[in-house]
Amino acid sequence: MFYDIDRRKFKRIERRTEPMVKVLIAFPLDDVYVSRIDEIEGVDTVKATEHQSILKEIEDAEVLYAFRITEEEFLKAKKLLWIHSPFVGVDSLLIDPVKKSNVTVTCSRGIHASQASDHVFALILAFARRLPELLRDQKRRKWKPRHPFPFEPLDELQDKTLGIIGLGSIGREVARKGKCFGMKVAGVKNTRSHLEHVDEIYSPENLERVLDQSDFLVICVPLTKETAGMIGEKELRKMKRTSYLINIARGGVVDENALIKALRNGWIAGAALDVAEHEPLPESSELWDFDNVIITPHVAGSTPHYWDRAVSIFMENLKRFLSGKELMNVVDKNRGY
Image 1: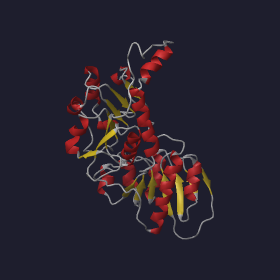
Image 2: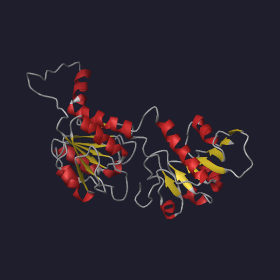
Image 3: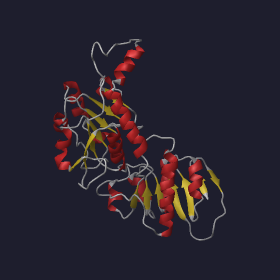
Image 4: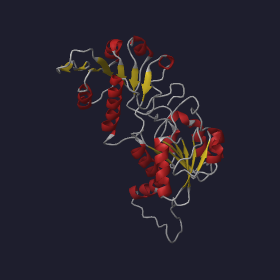
């Protein structure tokens, strides 16, 4: 039986008489997908998106499908065994009580690589081919000659160095596409095992080896206590003055005040930010004012196929949960991913 608590409606479905596993969906997932989940044998599905409704329904829920949880909600969850996030990032779920508990946390890892890497290269190409500048000229109805005279060439990606911090599924796909453009790829990851499409792999302790050679530096790491603020003034000063920083991970990985200082003083050529320390990015932020900054509103993972993919992962995991099998995409709660 699927209940939508917030809208006070329910759909009655004939069920077997064995004990049911209660699944609480605590975000506004479309009812089409909720109904698909509810068709799985052995589950009783409830959708509740308001805080007070969640507090009530979470008390006897064994499974929670959500991208955030409050301490008050978690302490009410007396039967909770498993939390699944519809996103890859789980920092909004890993509050201290969850981390200290035996509750398993899983995520939707693996559904962002295609579209997020496309977004990365949209930003890289925008800088290389000076699209922001050309679009500003278009708005002014200005045809500015650049070739052959005067010679103000646009750039190409061939033989440029692509630095990637974080070689998970997204980082590896960025590397693969970089190779299609003829780029050299240098990456940072915790283990230095060989990866296809990556020419050089460094440990986080050797981050500067990637910083000082990258023409485009792409950040793909999750936000953890180790990665918070990992790109600060020291790291930005290590980058080439002709290099661009691209962050599609989490805003907290980059020290925004240091980035503003770097842009103001010309330590780097520019930055593309799909994320911010505080979202939405405040109107008062100086980052809006730089001509060499591209800001997109946390849309790198956007695709028409997102919810089909995300719900498919949850449904597969739910079937595994019901049959006692090992779950996919289990998060190490101490490492944060």
